[in-house]
Image (cartoon, rainbow, N blue to C red; front, side, top):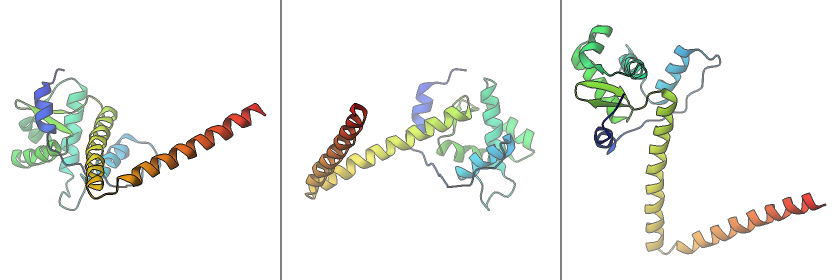
Length: 172
């Protein structure tokens, strides 16, 4: 499967990821684990009692794992759902950065759920790196920059102290 990089970049320019703290299933079962992932990513709520988003996401992931995309028409036929409802869910999945569209076919952003979770984590990390840099700039403009220096020094001396104790422990 070859996905056009410009399609991925365009769909990832702006995205919305919902992450919820959810209790993980006690027993590892594929259905319960998939439900856990979807609930953690905010797919499960009272506005979707049929769990259409989960079913659609599962079909897209399965198609991608087989090395092919899936059309909204094929999804609506498999789920016996209206094509409009399917497209609405697909648009939400694309806004979340989980699904991409190439032509009339939809793909999971990664070939496996594991890699998809890693990509989402990298996306979130990039957002927070930008937020931290912006916060540093604001703090600097407000005159709080010395706190970073003292925080760095404290961390350095704490690390040096722990390292020194560790080496002296090994020597004795």
